[in-house]
Length: 150
Image (cartoon, rainbow, N blue to C red; front, side):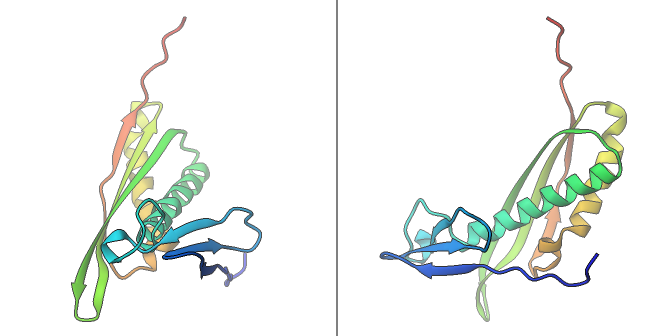
């Protein structure tokens, strides 16, 4: 495995207060704007949403890899992320990000292990580790409802 990787993205303004985000080898683009609170258009992805989305998607990918390597069968994973932006001496910044993974396992016996792997994923997530905001994780592990035989 390499010790260094590079990724590139390109953003440019289009009409009014909108922009487009694109990346090499990814056929779909993302329309974005500043949040309405900062003079942008409503209804579009914002840099703030994209940052929180990066945290959520990185956590999902990291947890999936750790669970697979640990041979933990997971029947569901949802990750909710909330961020708080406050003004400080340098301007506005994310001061806190809360990650709320909801993991569903098939067996009650897997709950403790799922919780431990959730903590590992939090510590290993590249995006979360790259941020200066305070990160908090609040895990929930559920057991899947048994499917009734028809």
